[in-house]
Image (cartoon, rainbow, N blue to C red; front, side, top):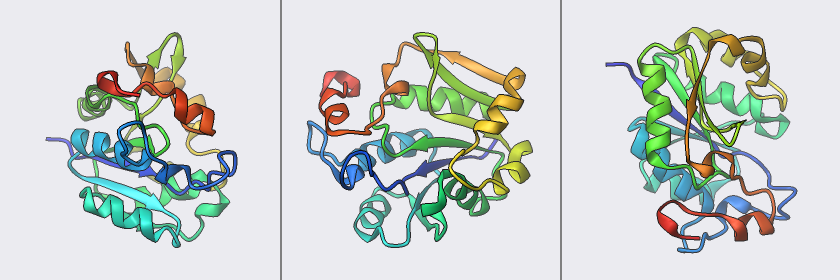
Length: 197
């Protein structure tokens, strides 16, 4: 059985939010990043959270949820560094399910479906809702070297653009694949799975 590792990218600085958005409580009191972590962990038993070195409070919360925490010293230089650090910590994986810690509303079933596409042989996979590609994004192990070489703030966008013909699109009715928290207004507007929010 393919070993797909979940990577929760949680090293963002929340500049647009005006503070640490990942620790902000959702309507049910769960911190944003913890909700995202729980869903990812439910889809990928082996999940890693990538944080900045100083995020001790968040690290404690995510370790309590069963995620392995990787500190990325270069995280301030952009998401590419965080993604590379997560892949480096799980080089033997058959693929990765990359989720963002500021997207707490993605259904577990959606995460599982994208992971299953990668486990089943897709090179790249992502959900689409209302004609827009969302998150998470799945990468097969064939992209290991390219992911390890990432830096800056582009993340894996270049891989997805250059190899879009290899992208397996999962059509979904899950609006959570597009809902991220960039501002307090975003947080207030979230629709949590199961009708909360």
